[in-house]
Image: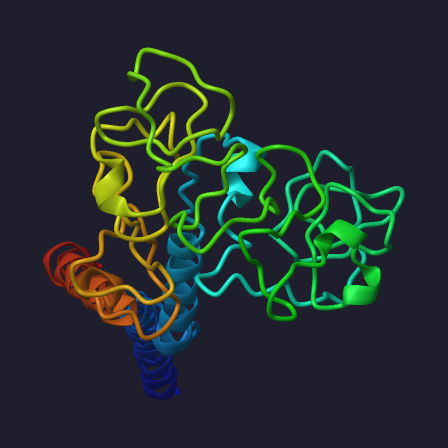
Length: 308
């Protein structure tokens, strides 16, 4: 009987020791599993591929928000449209379908809309026969009587006198005046008054040597040399004066186009700095994190566990 009690006592003691050891082992394994999962960068909870896509999309959106605004000079409305309605054949402006809106002081593209009584900006197209200060169009029935030119129908000639004030962009020109509308007939459109002088508005054409205040700006880039862009605004193309160089086409950048002037496009941008694979960068960062956590686990945590 005493022997049986001793055996039971020993058995219970061994059982308790075994349970205690088993509990400690399982507890260590659980902690170790948690640490390994953490060292893998929470890959069991947050898939890296999805996070990479989100990071890449976020960075690209921020990159495309870089918008650089460049101030432009305020131009004289008459200068803006001085030559826009004059072609080499002096054809009349096509009659537009849209009626002008907005203030009569607004600047509109030459012949882009039809004048109305309440909205009559410069360079609008004549809409009735008693209209004035407007562009003559191919709809001859809407033109004032002095819009009708002698010679070929629908052509400007030397005797054409369109309706409008002196210097307006619809002032008719003769075939020999180089496309520059002048307010008074001259043997030569070039100014002879020195640049320091003043002439009636648009009474002669500016030249490199003589460009007095009030002269009409030429549209030939080579004729603009030595004339400031404050006096004659920059041409859209071919103007080599300082500050008038053509701006790059940001919708179609080249490899050499600066990202400061033209921000990166969302897709198909040829510039190397605009095609960084942010998903690869984030994956590399994730790998670095996993390696670091593994090192911490092996060098610090495991020795502590072994002391339990």
